[in-house]
Image 1 (cartoon, rainbow, N blue to C red):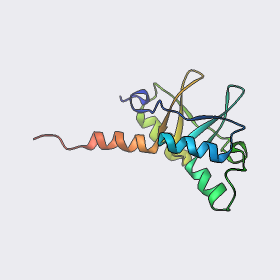
Image 2: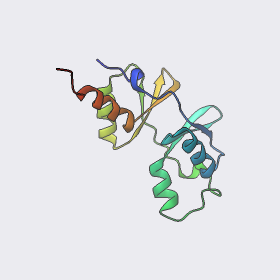
Image 3: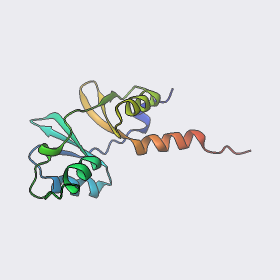
Length: 131
C-alpha cells in the first residue's frame, strides 16, 4: 500500500494570519506552490489556495495588497495522517471537492498533498512497462 509520506510535498508555504493576500501569493509563486497554510500564534487556522485567490480576490476585483489573508482563507482544513494510503487521500479529496490536503504527523504539520501530487502518483502507476 502506497503511503502519503512518499508522495507529499514537504515544501509547505506558511504565513502568519496578519500577512496580506499579495504577500502570500508572492511566496506561493516563488515556490511554485498552489496553497499556503495560515498560522496564528503557532496554530494552524486556515488554508489559502489558488481557488480562494480567483473567487475571493480576482473575481470581485479586490486589492490583494490591502486585504489580509485571514479574511479570505478557508477556515475548514482537511487533514490526513502521513501514514495513510494514497487511496484514502484520493477518496477524501474527491468527497470534499478539494485540491489540497494538509498532512500531519500526529498534531505536527509536515507536508501538503495536492491534486498535482496525486496525478503524478497515478501516472506513475499507469506508466508503460518495458516489454
